[in-house]
Length: 218
Image (cartoon, rainbow, N blue to C red; front, side, top):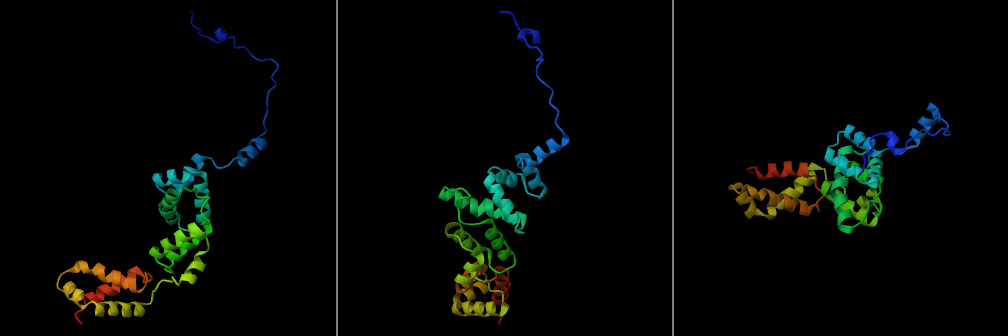
């Protein structure tokens, strides 16, 4: 069979009856502005926020996840912290429960409130996780759960000192071993204090106070 090599071989010819189409700049601009944000534009916007490519690809892989993220940071939440919570605990919950982000009872507003409460020191990160899972499963508000369960973080040094002293007094053997060189027992004492405070002691403050007390000679 002979080869087709040019337009004539395919019988292409001009269409004489098609009128020319002239689009105004105003019309083109109107159509462009009516389009939703395209994936590439969204990726570039997230990159400009300082997110890593891994973060960007995760968030833009699902339009609903991206919308939830945008709504969360619109509350004033830290961009990286919002990303970490969504990619971490929220994503794990969705995978385990075989749900989409639109199926959970957690709202973007409450995730923003949760991040703000941890950042301000009202609650610890550990308590924040407990609240998060309850919000995803049952709904509610961060403020309501903190009040209902009395979860406000203990940041009063005097109160923490009293609890640390109590734990040391109740564990003289372990204290003697620690001061004798078994410094790994530091974790034991920290755990005992967190148990006494039900996880509400400020971790940074607790660490400083209980180390001071452990290394004190008195």
